[in-house]
Image (cartoon, rainbow, N blue to C red; front, side):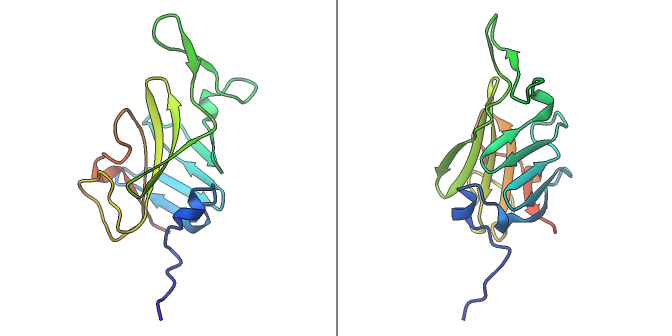
Amino acid sequence: MMKNLKQSMALDEVKVGNYKSLNGTWQNGMGNQITVKNETMQFTDITSNKEPRTITGQQLDIPGSDGPDGTPKEVSYIGDSTMKAYKQTLITEEYNGVFSLKSTLPGAMLCVSFLPKGMMGDLSGGDVNKDKIIAVGTQNSPTAVEADQVYYKIS
């Protein structure tokens, strides 16, 4: 009889905004943390501006980038044009067994990728025997990161 591993990442649930299988604290090698409770993920830092972010279901909130009405403010982008500081409704993508939530940022994407045990994506280092989360601002593959940027569950 196979033992049910309660700490296993339930990717089918994650895909619909239910993060219950991820509940707890996740930390990367740089000391950044993600606290997960049911439908909410709170990040200490993703893009190195030391600005907290929250994902609830498939909605992103970056309070420091919001205007007075609570929605993303307009920011300057290329010449005289402007764009929203970020996209609140996250785009979902699955590639080679890796599921990602993405938001556009000026000149980049904010990506949170979920790699169940056994998946490595484009990682060149890391523990294949553990569930992993990668949260980065990038213009490249969301899983092509250094090993110290990978989050593992610590509690």
